[in-house]
Image 1 (cartoon, rainbow, N blue to C red):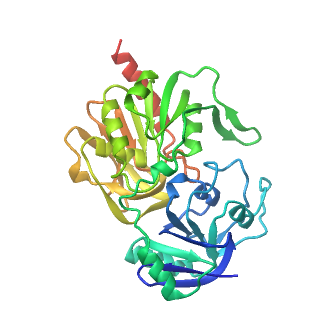
Image 2 (cartoon, rainbow, N blue to C red):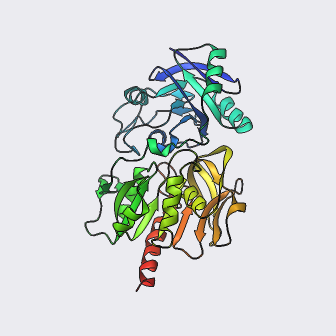
Image 3 (cartoon, helix red, strand yellow):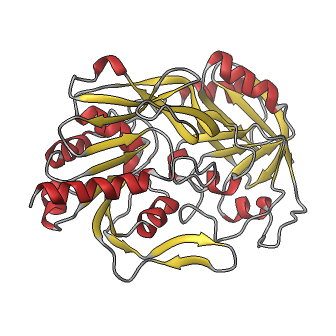
Length: 376
């Protein structure tokens, strides 16, 4: 079956349908990861986006239900060069095509993804339409132009949990699977779910944290009533600016409990501290982003997935810019000079990606211990 991808600026690609049939709209972006398509599919941060993989062949390892980062795929559509229908991996349970069909994700393959990625890089990420139903170029471009931008949309409400829950799973090891969380955990941590990935929770649990996940809209007073030792601000989709309820909650938590934020959580913390964000031309999505830790001079290769960045000119004198992206000099981390609070724009939990920044979970527990000593 034929399929088409049309961009709002008039660029149209024709290819072959795979996954579910139908028509979807979303912001067309690209991810440079060589592996990890399954984790990318199930990362809630991709809500509202049509994801293009730069790696030319996808699906080689199939799908297994251990490696998902949430209960289902969240992206709007999937674009690849070539789909592998004969996966070779001892953990594979089904093909990528079958998984997309099962979860109603529309995909297109067989287009020149190199041309598409270069176009996005030059012209910027933009709204697009994938369709297996309508193959008229003019019609699809018109639909893309009529679809809303993700700027100004609150996508967090569509992915956050409905009720609090306790997380009980540690990190995965070969031959053993996911370890149970330690029976006796040293620290009580409340994790705000703005679109949280499961491997973040696994790393928190394996770092000695008893983790309770709460909805994005939970007021600060209710969280403080739980008497946590620390609060975690998760990753999530879209524009941080309209998530005003979370920004106000963070303001009320600052100085009362140690805070660690990742990705959207980093942006929300920055805004709560008086900063602002702006939309990147095509974002950072992949597992090969070099980041400088200014305190140590160490360069980490990091996993990233975001389309917005913190404006350094808007950060006050009480905020230290702790990490910088070496590709474009954007802000990759901040730390408050008075409050026990820090955040990074990238993903130390990986899945997919390198583990260079895994130490940040230990930094969070160390910050909790320091805060506890200061209260004695």
